[in-house]
Image 1 (spheres, rainbow, N blue to C red):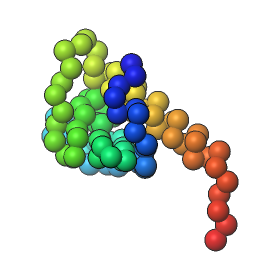
Image 2: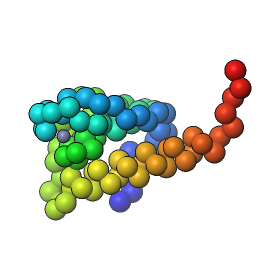
Image 3: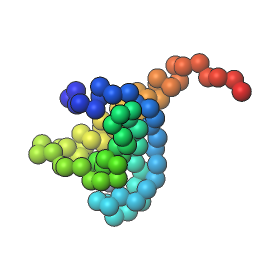
Image 4: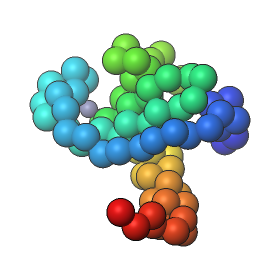
Length: 91
Ligand SMILES: [Zn+2]
């Protein structure tokens, strides 16, 4: 744990349904927008990770797909929690 991308600022995160080139189906993706780094997306079904739309190198560790999925879900929950703790501006 403690990958390099965690040192940047997470600008935005969202769940988006898109075509997964690995699953060859419509899947839910977690999109992460990192300041300085760019856009990462993770397929929540197969765990394949993409950077700026390009498939990233697969790690040589067992269970990396599930690890990617769990990390994406954890990040999403953490982001939602952080977003909810901020006062909501009234328009
Ligand atoms: Zn997929």
